[in-house]
Image 1 (cartoon, each protein chain N blue to C red):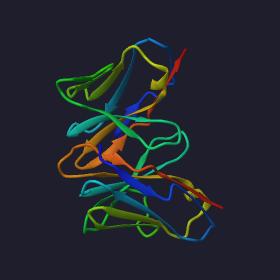
Image 2: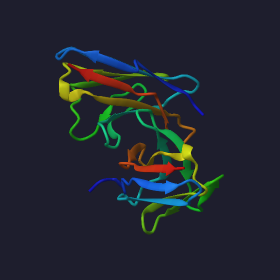
Image 3: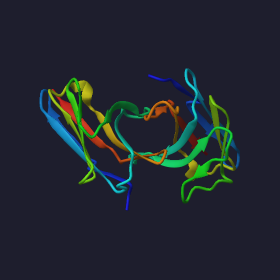
Length: 108
Length: 115
């Protein structure tokens, strides 16, 4: 079983739409959680950490449900520049495991 | 955010030769560095984790004698792909973290093509 599972998408949405991604992880002892963004042929860049209480950064909201072992990312008012692959990342005992990524295409 | 520099950004080598990739943390001390491999349209696969001054821990299925990792200082780790073959062609990315932060920061990646 994979450490982290994500729907690969793609999610094709119009500008201004709200879109949500989910991700599940297998190890209940995982310590920390992140969303990274990866543009085509580039390295991943940290988008935001995910806290148990949920956290928001502008148009982005991340939530963690430890009981169900899933993480979510909500993007409001999508912009064309949000088009990318979003990677769910889980830290297990100092090892970072990545989901396969969810591709988002925001269209005019 | 913290800066991680990876070099070279791309390399083409002949089958059977060895290639060294460097990963440097420029403005922080990287107590732990990670090496990943990413094939087209696939996720990043963790290859190994290294802590400064100690031997790297390899993930299952990764040959430690083929992918030599050295983490000799708190700012530098190297990955050497020995006796490279075409199937080793991939995007290799390093990341680093410091003890004070929970997240990891990534190098720009190295696109390796073995011909």
